[in-house]
Length: 163
Image (cartoon, rainbow, N blue to C red; front, side):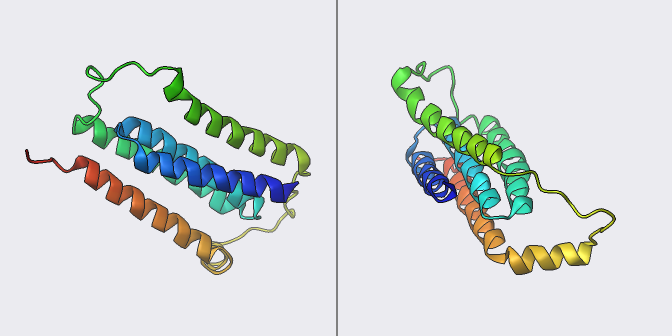
């Protein structure tokens, strides 16, 4: 069951990222990228890296995407007054990807027994860093590359085109 959820979320991540790349409206692209980040977060949780999953949600899906949204609003790239109202055709990809991610996360959380932390064992900064960059080093690199791609996309969208 976990393997099926993994492949479903991997497909959601890839499709949402492709939609984010292909979307012409910058705010819609951010929504697709946040969907990709949430699906990737559930994948990390499924793979036994809950700290990386939490970082993915808090840092990337939360703080960085809000920053990108503010940059888009500052540069006036959204132009909501000129945009047409989205129809049903425009909403179904985001709703479908979000519903699949939410269903997979709920199924995963319902199937797992709650983890019990050992009492009295505190972890220091050094142990945390060794675990993060040792055991989860590849995950940290994948997330950093994802952030780099998002940054390049924001710079491309923010660059004024000369006519």
